[in-house]
Length: 99
Image (cartoon, rainbow, N blue to C red):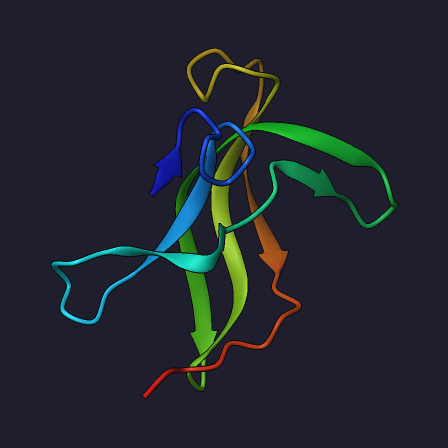
């Protein structure tokens, strides 16, 4: 879910992770912040995203490989942005499926 104020994940507008065993009761994950709003491009340049919207994962063999999302420049979500585009972010950490 989106942390609109940054009071949980520490960065306004980022997504946070919740865990549920029954899809009714929720609790925060140990590391609740799902991602950072600053993008690092292949050439090493950094750019703060105005938003990440409609995140989706590419999963292969039960392992998430890429995060796909719509993004924008500047502050103010997609509506206030000068430019919007879709990006994919390779995931570096291994996903461990709980049993």
